[in-house]
Image (cartoon, rainbow, N blue to C red):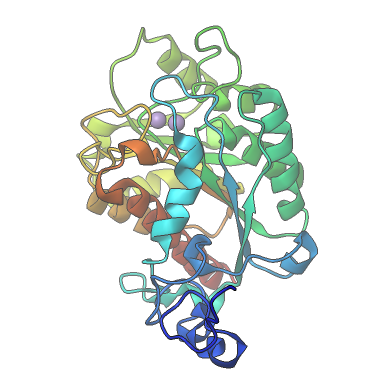
Length: 342
Ligand code: MN
Ligand code: MN
């Protein structure tokens, strides 16, 4: 006989009679907070997970997990990044004290779950991720990608560019990811933005790469990026310039183009984000990263992601926490951008 749980207290399921008052939606609503932010099934910010795509219609943004790490060149495991970001994201609350905006008051968000990737098969995964994200962009919903290694951003860009045309890329990353091939492969986390240029998805002359650093095999990839037209700000230069100055540089470069923002968590110094596949020392702190973000104008942003979170190497979950916080911050900036842009 199964135990009768309807009369007990503090169990997982308390029965129809008492369950309503303890559901996360009643306690604090989605987008974190409430007095039970530690309970409930983990979606991004505890947002609703619609039963089908059609139910997402009308939402302002949709989280899509991209649990793919076949494109990794060093430490694998970023396929578990989306789950780790969702897990800790229940701690991110809706009111952003610095931006003075409550995301939940202005944006309706959903978490659509994960795109059906095929581990080990990069072309099939890219195709499935592209189809999944395109379903979101076709409904006019801002896609928020949770990675996954940086290969996944190529799928995001394919979907976003199909809707908006070639976009400006704002890339937070310690690596340019513009290699032609890496280990002889054309599609992996070292090549997405080279492929994005080849496929006409991004406008390099309107694009900015922030935080580049670390040792490389040679300087060819940097020469390529510069020749292609990217505005590149290496970490040592970035850290010497105030956030407002960097924001002005980004605005001048991006101008009126729609913008895609990709945040590779290895933009952060590994002291602040150890859980990532290809860490590079000499990067910004989380506080500095937030300051650079907060100075930016997000009015033209049509898609975003946070990638390269690798939970197996993540001490105390700080990398996933940084990722979830960055996503919350970016959504706050979307609210401010829409308010300013009308
Ligand atoms: Mn990257
Ligand atoms: Mn990187």
